[in-house]
Length: 348
Image (tube, rainbow, N blue to C red; front, side):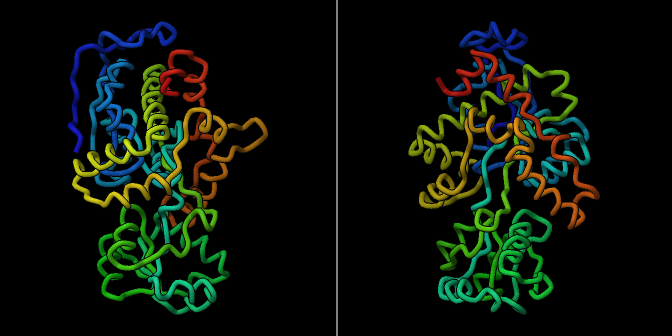
């Protein structure tokens, strides 16, 4: 796991962004929430290894959480200021604690998957109706359940026609390995375990069924209002990490391996390469296009609207918050409008 607090000398804070030097001279502490050993968090680790926090005048203080719900719950006490989380916790945080999403960490749609055994998958693809009455192992009310809902709609199968068994991810892997269930609903890195050890293959993913699962780069609204420059510097660091990863795929695998092992997760190099291949990440210009509302609702608006409807349907939130109330491109535009921050975010 990453050290929770970092100290260091040559860094800067409190400077106007327009006058920000390449290397700063003092730092300001920033409380960052995260989860260990996840692809979306790799830019945080990369920034520490590369010394980018110091260049942006940030002294990061990391709080690590085992999952999204406790991470979001901690926002109520103000124990963190910014962070990265999953899409469902991001929407939950918007509904309950005024959490704002300022960018997309990655597209997780292809790694939220219904898995089938290799010797059965072609028969299921040829006749999805054969799934009626079958046991499907799933973690309910999660993004992979969102994928299940959309895949069933695609196949014209009512959910009630299945035997949906609610298990956590570890339980699903254990049960599926012993022959239980016709399908297993898994997300990364569990899908790689199923592929490598259980001869399982993807049957239907979020990408296949238009159940888009974006990851969230987030900030508490109160902190954003008081510290817009700091939030812009934080996001510039993340975007620089994304730009670096896109430009250096082989080195990214090495960074991921160190980060995952530090978080207690051991996966094969093939699984790490699958993470990179299956989870698109978006640089500054791509983020701006995804968020643009110049001609009506943005592409990102549509992604989050579908997820919000699902979370309301299953009772995770009583009413899905309007996407425009929590998804904002203001910080991205702040970076794009500042030459120093823009160049930093683009890794130039």
